[in-house]
Length: 309
Ligand SMILES: C[S@@+](CC[C@H](N)C(=O)[O-])C[C@H]1O[C@@H](n2cnc3c(N)ncnc32)[C@H](O)[C@@H]1O
Image (cartoon, rainbow, N blue to C red; front, top):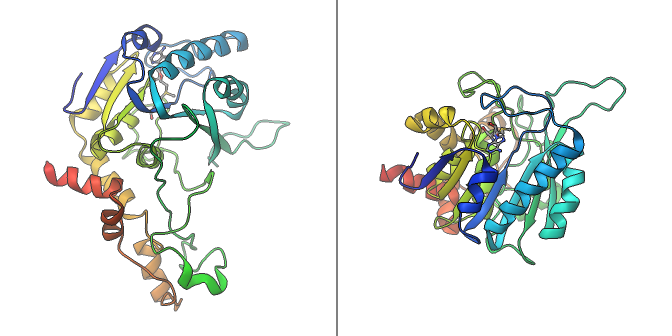
C-alpha cells in the first residue's frame, strides 16, 4: 500500500528490512510483540522460549540499526523485563539517552509481585547526539474536578514558560487505547498521543519515520497526519489498510491532542479554575497555535497539513 507520504510492506520485517537502503531513516519506532502468548491476526508465535525471543529481537534490531541515519533516533517499546536484556544489546550499537517510563495503571496484577504499572520506552541515538530533538512541553497538572495545581509552583508562576512544563522521562498522561470509539482491533494498539509525542520530538517535516511492527498502523497514521514520510512493515496489513482509508477520527483525535500541548493550561483546566476561583493571572498563558507557529513544531505542521487537504 502507498500513500502520498508513505509505503507499507506486507511480510516479515526480517525479510523486508534488508531490501531497504542503509541510513535512510531519521526516526525508528518499534513496538514488537512482547512474547506474552497473545493471539495476533498475523498468527505470529508470541510464546517463544526466552533465548529464542532474545535472539530474534537481536536480529531485527541489528537490521533496523543499519537503516538509521547518523543522528537518527531509535525508540524501543517493551516490557521492563525485555528492555533490561535488550537495552544492553541496543546500548552496544547506539548511544543511550533515556528509559522513559510510560505509566499504565490498567494492567493485571501478578500474584507475589509488585503491581506492574509501566512499560519501558528506550530512547537511543545513532552517534553521540540526536540530529533532531524538540520535545513538546506539557500542561501543568491540575485536579480534574477543581482545576487547582497538583504541584506547588510557589513564587515562580510568572517565570514559567508559557508553552508549558518540560517533558520528563515519566509519562503518566498516555491513555491506554480502550475506548471502542478509537480501538480498532483486539490486539495491542498504541495511543495516538504516544506516537504524536515521539514523532514530534525526533522528526521534522522532511524526515522519514520507520516502524517494522505496524499492528493497527498508529505510527503511520500519526506520521501521515503530521506530514512526515514513513515506511512500514506488518505481517497482516488488513487493519492498517482499513484505517488509512478513512483517517477522519484519527485526525480529530490528533487535533485535540495538538490543542492540549505546548500550553501551560488545558482549556478545560482554565474554565474549571475560573469557575472555582483559582487565580491564573500570575502565569503567562498563551494559545498554543501561536506558540507552535513560533517554534515551527508539529501541531503547526498538523494545522498546515490539515489545511492542505
Ligand atoms: C504489539 S503489535 C504493534 C502495535 C502497534 N504499535 C499499534 O499501535 O497498533 C506488534 C505487531 O507486530 C507484528 N509482527 C510480529 N512479528 C512480525 C514480523 N516478523 N514482521 C512484521 N510484523 C510482525 C504483529 O503482527 C503485530 O501486529
